[in-house]
Image 1 (cartoon, rainbow, N blue to C red):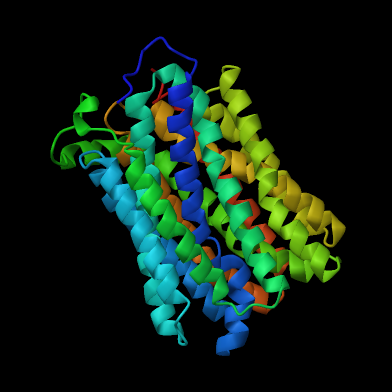
Image 2: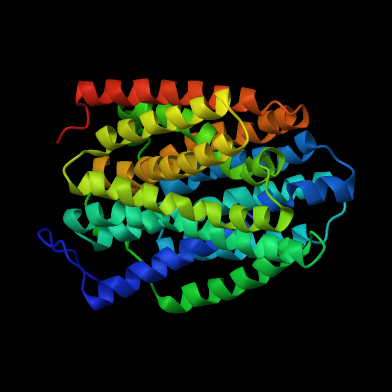
Length: 402
């Protein structure tokens, strides 16, 4: 196990290899997660459902994911991350394989809810490995680059799904193929030997301290509320972006698929900008406020105009929303949480982010059925204004000043 040097800011070859293995493992989680987005219209057509009905798949997933973050985020402080990540990968692989064999919405909802809970076994435990292994200076550098796994994983998943759709495969292939790949990733993770023992962090112990949890909520509640409304926006964008573009942007079908698959990669520059803001001395709250203002502007443009303006605005939205996600879910717990509480802080933030975001599955699906995308953009604008107010208030209070 690599021991952190408090003054160290650079990474040697062994450390870079460990980071890449953790990063690529979490990227693989997304293969069996966001593959549902391109499949929405196909499942609706095959099973005779509306977009609002298949949108429940996104809702139950993120609600279950949020509950999983609350439970597994706490357990991630006291259980070895190697086991939690392995259990998550194996369950995700199994649920995707079983999902591909179903013909009715009820078992699909159950399996995707199980998948959502299992997905929570990745983020918190992997953050704990990074916090326990690297110094504060190294973690500051890692905070946003590590979160780029969101975007790379989404892009790879969508590229694979849209490629399968373009060659005329049944919707089931979008799930059984990721299931097989994740089975192989599970084996690779186990043989990597990557882990972090609970005693590596001074405030960790063999059991959950519920008083600590209560104090954590008391301290973090404004940022938890900000994360909730931000999650509603980001996850709604992630779930419905392929459908939104297909119904609003005047591009040929093949070009639209290609562009949709690559669009998540636009989030990488946003995450890089977020990282640069941190590197230049901005704290995570200040950096978040700047990105929130840019996101509000993008949604206002989409509310007022459509067509090509919506496409440009969506590029800006993906760019800024991804940077905001990396700050909220990665930089906040890594840089603001107390030692020994990074997994639980990350778990709580991701939980409220996901539970609130899950409601976007059905709500936006119903508005999409009515072709009311302007209403969607207006709702997202209001949400980001609320998040901006809470972040600015916390920054002014200085409650996370060390």
